[in-house]
Image (cartoon, rainbow, N blue to C red):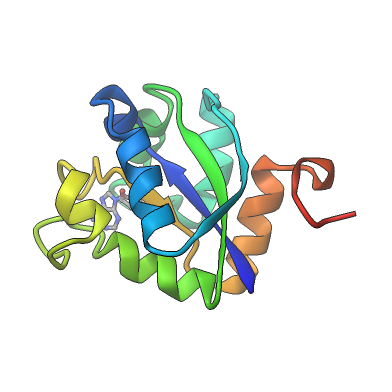
Length: 140
Ligand code: CMP
């Protein structure tokens, strides 16, 4: 078993889809290991997405991620990183496969309902961004 980080994004929060998305992920075989509701500051969103700094969509991404609360959640499963990326589908919901979270719930490439870590290394970094060890099950 290993862990990855998902973030339910502002568009899904504002349209009342957070519960449906969490239920979808549980039905897909993930267990929730930690969960918070947070309002990101501009500095926090900029840091979280610093890998995208300089890209044309960066400023809009930071503005979007601070526009409403978000739910970061640690999910556990076999091959959690790959499994979650498959479960959420392509960045652009128009390209996402049927039955994926983004196909079902995302509005657009920019307002795409959910974030998922893209590697085990980034999962560890992103989990540590939102959660201290005492908030995580099974971590001393
Ligand atoms: P996410 O998985 O959170 O990682 C980076 C985010 O940038 C991505 O999802 C999209 O929501 C957002 N984004 C906006 N425009 C683009 C783009 N042209 N290419 C990739 N990501 C984009």
